[in-house]
Image 1 (spheres, rainbow, N blue to C red):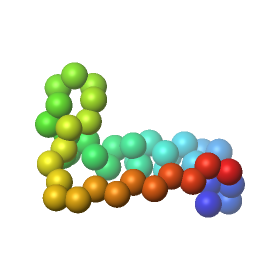
Image 2: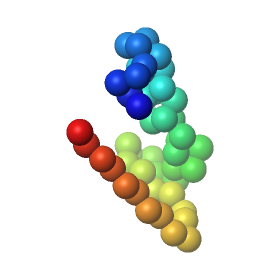
Image 3: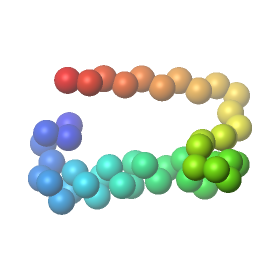
Image 4: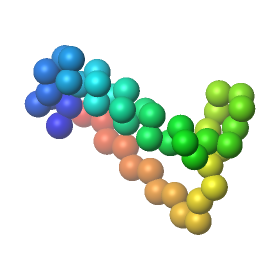
Length: 46
């Protein structure tokens, strides 16, 4: 999907995506600490 976006849109999308967990972060030291019953993260690198 990222290859289908122009550079400005890709940067905007990346910044927005990085901001998704911010309201749930309970850590104050730059790491992520968020409550959750179940977390699944799947990454694909091409």
